[in-house]
Image 1 (tube, helix red, strand yellow):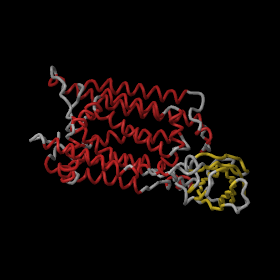
Image 2 (cartoon, rainbow, N blue to C red):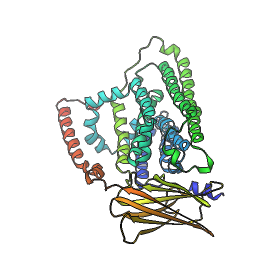
Image 3 (cartoon, rainbow, N blue to C red):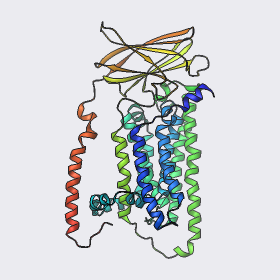
Image 4 (cartoon, rainbow, N blue to C red):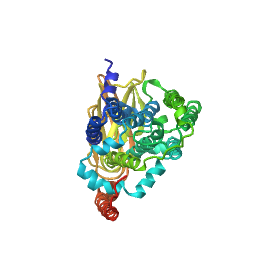
Amino acid sequence: MDPIVAATLQSWTFDPWIIGSLLITAGIYLRGWRELRQQMPDRFGAWRLVAFLGGLATIFVAIASPLDAFAGLLLQVHMIQHMLLMMVAPPLILLGAPAIPMLRGLPAPLLKNGLGPFLAWPALRRLGHFLANPLVCWISYAAATLAWHTPALYELALRSEVWHAVEHICFLGTALLFWWPVIQPWPSRPQWPRWAMIPYLLLADIQNTALSAFLIFYERVLYPTYATVPRLWGISALDDQAAAGAIMWVPGSVVFLVPVGWVIYQVLESSQARRGAAPRPAPIGRISRFILSMLIPAVVLLGKVSPVRGHQGGLVQLTEQASPFIITVFAEPKPLRAGPAEISVLVQDHDSQRPVLDAEVLVLLQQRGSDGPPIRAEATRQNAANKLMYAAKVELPVSGQWQFRVMVHQGAASADVAGRVTAEPPRPFLLSSWPYLTLLPLAIGLFGLHQWLNRRRGGHPGGQPA
């Protein structure tokens, strides 16, 4: 196998928090699905389990595979990642009819005594009614797509691991809402007539086509980061941008138009039965339950994003031709701060622009104006998430200006480049630890709300969660 292909395939990231969250979600669903399978075998066939687990697997591929490692270097790879999160994973998850299996998979005491008052809360039911409206679903999806593809927000996501995670959660969440009225997972009922899903999907395809056409035909690089990163395999930034637009255009249209055909078939088949019938109201309680269950892994993923170690190499600090190499130096976290940091180096052959995978790379860091010994660290491919790069883990004791020097040796060939980076002060404790500091007041608030709702429900005999 070609060494570059092998290095690409090795660029997986096995984050225990991501794997754990997905496995817990899969386990809860499987437990509920097995129980429902015994009671309703016709409704909960094996295909629902395969669809739901396939959706979770798609999420894992999108955020942990080499797609994530190369998303910061190639816009077309980043586009594939986004399409998996918005057009593949959500329909598969909803085809699994996850609302009831996720609830039945929870321990009975937790469901009855813990979540019961929340799920019966009228305010939550009203929120579910609002979110399940197809107009809200469509607008939220289109707004998220367009907003995150504007240069300002797209660059923000590229430069910040936290905002990158927020972007992905936003894509996945709004896509689940968008596909909800299209899939209409059991036991929900449509708020709009079935034929309304035809213009619903066609308008989404028009919005997708307009955005992809803009990427293809725009004559300048839309996102400055992709103009500064090294060009792998000689692909120019404009060609990469056009390829990303083509990927969004053609497969994206297929994703929207295939369900259009499916809906048309459903409408024709049921035209006699539906004639003169009014749309039935949606069971809002069940929708609220699904939204609540899906928020849990999303919050865990956001709260556990590492502020130091990313998967794309960090921000470009220097790109320089040093014969016979082209050397690009990256730094993480985004932005670089005093404390744990990572310096990544991509070494390319000057003539072919192919990554060099058998070099020895040494990184030296010296605080500007300091006479002390420099920080020395060997950069290796084993330390890098993207296996086409070399990475060195260092500790920057103070903020300020730092001078770096990168020395590359490959056989008789050698090169030496130097530059400067600015390390900002460490993130304040409250900002870096907010997910943990909010757990206690959040738990106290939820407990108080739970007790209040429980008393209200107890004051109305016969009241049951919807």
